[in-house]
Image (cartoon, rainbow, N blue to C red; front, side, top):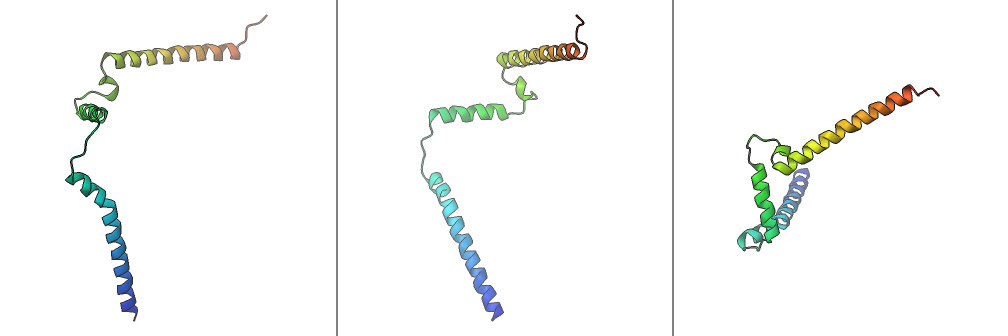
Length: 99
């Protein structure tokens, strides 16, 4: 009786898995069988992603060209200026001027 019960439960689980797989993979099968029109903007995005995925030895912030270099150096400059201003402010608060 216990063996029969476990076999029935196993079949129920297998049937559930079969239904789950059928429902989750049917859309994929349908898309593969039919030609789907891809929007041009999406195709351009995919081309850019493929170009960025190539291992050419450059780091991510070096791949964008001149504009990325400008942004990198501007950010670095702003960080240095902010650090200097922070240190100046800290010094002024630690040693206030005597009046």
